[in-house]
Length: 152
Image (cartoon, rainbow, N blue to C red; front, side, top):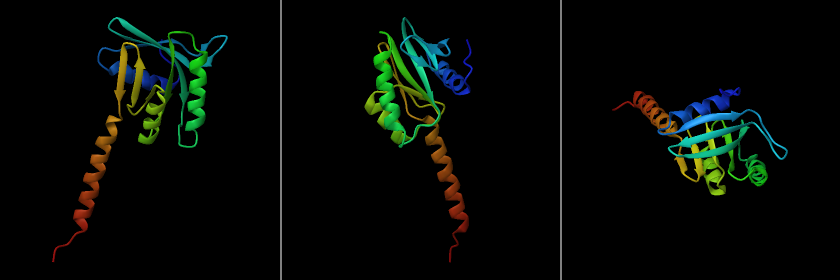
């Protein structure tokens, strides 16, 4: 089943690009008597699987972090045994990634940040594209600076 939400689609495609990981949407939305969430995702790696109840939060900022963290702790308490909450979002800043890791909130964003910490499946990827972007910006700035320097 292909997710309807484009953010969900991008994150699912990224997960499926990781070695030895199979990802499938089990339902969208995910509704039980205790929980209403954006979807359910099942990950498989060899003989291990993990079931995630997904919440899509398009923007996670310094101002909204505390509320989102409280909600994820609440959600974790409401889920059935064997289910784990997963934050799906756009781009996470390094500061927000650090806070999510400190709070043990599992997440994936469209830039490639991933933290999954379930029995049998542990993945931590820290924004691989940022390094490339930073290097390009540095090279471009160095070229601009070099073009403005005149030697006497």
